[in-house]
Amino acid sequence: MTPAPEIAASRWFNSEPLTLAALRGRPVLLHAFQMLCPGCVSHGTPQTQRAFELFKHSDLQVIGLHTVFEHHAAMTPVSLEAFIHEYRLTFPIGVDEAGDGTPIPVTMQRYGMQGTPTSILIGRDGNIVHHGFGQQSDMALGAIIAAELAAPHA
Amino acid sequence: MTPAPEIAASRWFNSEPLTLAALRGRPVLLHAFQMLCPGCVSHGTPQTQRAFELFKHSDLQVIGLHTVFEHHAAMTPVSLEAFIHEYRLTFPIGVDEAGDGTPIPVTMQRYGMQGTPTSILIGRDGNIVHHGFGQQSDMALGAIIAAELAAPHA
Amino acid sequence: MTPAPEIAASRWFNSEPLTLAALRGRPVLLHAFQMLCPGCVSHGTPQTQRAFELFKHSDLQVIGLHTVFEHHAAMTPVSLEAFIHEYRLTFPIGVDEAGDGTPIPVTMQRYGMQGTPTSILIGRDGNIVHHGFGQQSDMALGAIIAAELAAPHA
Amino acid sequence: MTPAPEIAASRWFNSEPLTLAALRGRPVLLHAFQMLCPGCVSHGTPQTQRAFELFKHSDLQVIGLHTVFEHHAAMTPVSLEAFIHEYRLTFPIGVDEAGDGTPIPVTMQRYGMQGTPTSILIGRDGNIVHHGFGQQSDMALGAIIAAELAAPHA
Image (cartoon, rainbow over all chains, first blue to last red; front, side):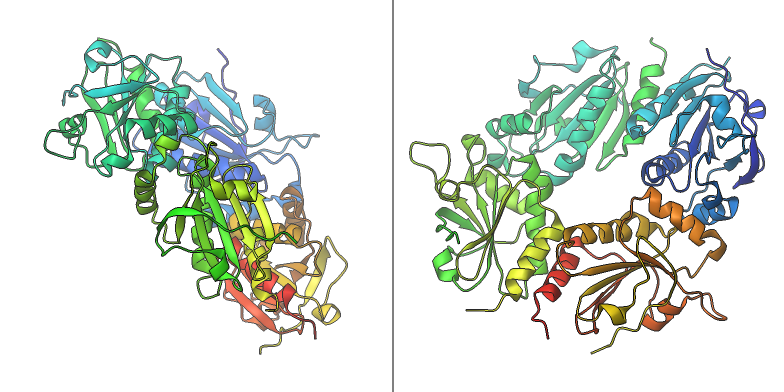
C-alpha cells in the first residue's frame, strides 16, 4: 500500500482549490502533463478529458496537474490558460508548485514521477492504485477506473 | 433483466464449440461482425482483440460471432478462415447458424441485433448487461467489462 | 527506361475492359491489392480511391488490380464484388488472370511485384515511372502523379 | 495573377532572415500557424514538416510563420522556441511582425488570411498559386507543390 502524497498547486483553473485530504473516500484520477509535451497534447490530455466525461455521473474526481519541469519560461500560467481554452479542457487543473532549488515541481517530486504524461489513480482509501508513465490505452484506463469505482466502500 | 439467448454456431475457429449455458458464472463479451463490414474491420473487431488480450488473466470469455446477413456467397467460412488468419484474430469465433427462410442468421435474430458491429456483454448471471450497436469507445467498453468483473459473484 | 508490361485481367468491375495499349499517352496509376490484405484495406486501397477522386479532372487513369497470390478460394470474384460494394470503391478494378501452374497471377508476375499493396505509376510514354511496394505516403504519391501529369506530352 | 506580398518577420528560428524578394525564382510554401491552435498542432504544422522533408532535394523553400492574432501574451517567442524544440520542427520559422493598433500581425493582414492553419504556395514568378485555409489533404498539397516544381522556369 502506497499512500498518495498530497498535491501542492499554486493556482487552479476550472475549479476551486482541491486537496486529496478533502477528497478522501472518492477515487481520484491525477493526470500530470505539460502543455508543450507532444505526447500529452496528442494522447494523455484528451484521454483525461474523455475520462472526465465518461465518468461524470460517478464519484470519480479528475484532476489535471501542470507539472512543468523544463522550459519554465515557455509554459507559464498565462500560456496554460490559453492552452486550456483552445483545447476545450473542462476538468479541474492545478499548477504544480515550483520546486525550491530544483526545476522539478513539488508534487511531481513527491510522487517520484518520471516525466509527462503520467496518469495516477488514487483509491477511495487514499492509496495509489495505478501509476502509469507514458501512453496508456483507453481500454486499460477505463477498466482500472471502473474496477476502483466498483470496489466496496470502506 | 434480459436473459441472454443461447448462441447457435455451425462452425468454430480458434476454439472448441462454446455455449452460454456452459459459461454461466463467467462474464461473456459477444462481438457480432461481418468480415466485409468496414466498421467491423477498422474498429469493432480489432477492439474485441484488444479486449481479449487486456482481460486474458480474468475469467471474461470473449466470443466473436460471424453474423452474415448480406452478401452470403461472399462471406463463406472459407473466406472467414483466411480473414481470421490475415488479421491475426486469436479469440474464439463462431459462424452464426444460417436462418431458415430469412437472410438473418439465428443468433442475430434471437438477440434482435440491428446490424454489425454489435458488442454485447453478458453478466455472470446470464443476463444482458450491455447491448451496443455501432462504434463503442474503448474506454467505455473497458469500464463496462471491468465493472462486471468486479461485481460480487452469486 | 522500363516499359510497363500489359495487364491481363479475367474480369472487370466499375469499367469496361482496359488495356495499357489503348491508354498510351495517358499516365496510369496501377494499384495491386488483395481484399484480405490488411495493409491494402487500411491504407493502399482507400489511398487509391483518394487519388481517383483528386485527379478526376486530369487524364490520369486509375486501375485497381486484384492480384490474389494466397488464399485463392477465399478471395473469389464473388467476394471481391461485395468488397468493392461495401468499401464504396468506384475506380476500375480488374481481376488479375490466374497463373498457370503457379499461385502468382499473370500481371503480378510480369511486373515482378513483391506483394500487396503495390502502387505503380506508368508514364504517358508507357514506361514505369514509380514502383512502390508497401505503404506509400499520400504526399509523395500526390507529388509523383502531379509531376507526371505536368510533364510535356510527346 | 495575385502577386504574393512580402513577409514581415521580427525574429527567425532555424534560419537567417528570409525575404520573398531574395527567393524569387523558387517556389515557396508559406505555412501560417499558432502554437496553441489545435488544428495547426495536430495537422498543419506536422504536414509542413513532411513537405519540408519530402521536397528537400528540390528548390522549394518552406517557411513557417507564427501569426499570433489571439492570446498574444500566451504565445511569445520564448514559448514558440520551446514549441519548435519539443515538436522537432526543422524548417525556417519567422515570427509575424506585430500589427500597429490591431491584434492581427502584419503579414497575416497583407495576405488577408482568415485564420490558422493557412498554407500558401507562391510560384517561381512570385504569384500566389494556392491559398488554403484549414485542413488540406496531404495528397493535394503534394500534387500542388509538385506541379509548380515541374512548371517550366521563366
